[in-house]
Image (cartoon, rainbow, N blue to C red):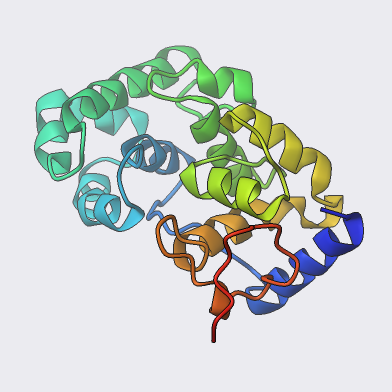
Length: 212
């Protein structure tokens, strides 16, 4: 995809949603970490149904540790893989207490040292909590990057690096959200809504649906 096309793409996406936001419910950087850990292989809507009650009871590392793994499991049991996620939430909360003075760290390396936190989760936290221009490649970004030709790759890391290289600096802060929203609501996995797509004339997807 040519630079002129990329600029036009993000001009359109930004005009439609000037200030995109993540859809996970959170109250502070710590609860954001917890919410993103819970969101692995789960929908944001499903996670939000559980985290309201969880964060009412515990919205800091100390409160989460005091709550205990059993209670966390009970509150998040509607979410897939909840047992392992509850265990990691307690472990990461304890590590924040022991090694980070209860503060969520602001580097990718430190974030990835927390149990249950991988590169994608770290990038989400850096972007949303600390306003850093990171790009977290989930299934939506992986699909959109490859379909459009904006950032092709065989692995999430390859797509992340390709997107970082392709996206102009002025759009990088919000690019993660624009592309997720586009993948979630327009460039869907099974039935992409190409006729309703703002960027269909810029997209390289060979099987795009052009009927209106």
